[in-house]
Image (cartoon, rainbow, N blue to C red; front, side, top):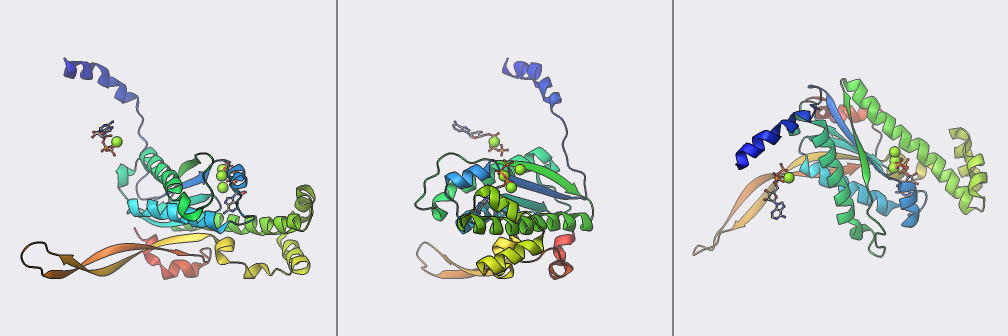
Length: 265
Ligand code: ATP
Ligand code: ATP
Ligand code: MG
Ligand code: MG
Ligand code: MG
Ligand code: MG
């Protein structure tokens, strides 16, 4: 009876649509915090850049990269993170909704899971959430341009925010600060330098360039304790994947020449 009922109902499965990503293209999943303008205010983020919040974003992204072995590079800034799968990944059969929802929910749960490590004295006031999208890039140039676009966005926003908050902390209303900060980039550099003695190029690279996460395979020697009569230990080697963060220019060719495997398959 049970199996009969099952076969009578199972047709509803056919309502599900295919969402496999085109083969031989880079799959990028980008997550972005929902309403983080408000979230950052409610949780007293340091303006313009709260380092604890950036570190928590990086930690969450590291958890995602550990779980998804085919994510070869990730780039994060502000409340967003982009995860790039190797071109020929077959993770989840390249199904967009599987990739996107698993990454997004792991990212969000990791953000909450690790919150107290980065904000020990500041309880979470409500559960944060993130949106996600999948974008496919067919050529090396498209993929590099995508990441360049995100890094340029980081720079533009950070320069604006640095000027804006310097002016606000200097006594201007947000409205007046905006009016003064909305000029071109040389005007903004000028305001920072002459009025606040800040040389923009000397600000921490994590603020100006965002974070690039890369993987590195390293060999480790382990000592396995053998239980039983022979209390001998036998050393053995294993390969572990380490994730490290860089805060550097990924727009220029030099970065990609240094890590050619990112653009292979
Ligand atoms: P949406 O839901 O449409 O994404 P949003 O409010 O999250 O809306 P974003 O454009 O994503 O808007 O901008 C994120 C905002 O979060 C930034 O403008 C900034 O105010 C805040 N923010 C994110 N990270 C930090 C940080 N490390 N330090 C300070 N503020 C931050
Ligand atoms: P996948 O990642 O493919 O979804 P899965 O291990 O989550 O793999 P499911 O088919 O979703 O597999 O099955 C969920 C499993 O979780 C159940 O088979 C059961 O073992 C366990 N589970 C879920 N809810 C409960 C519960 N309330 N009590 C006990 N076990 C549960
Ligand atoms: Mg958005
Ligand atoms: Mg956001
Ligand atoms: Mg954002
Ligand atoms: Mg399940």
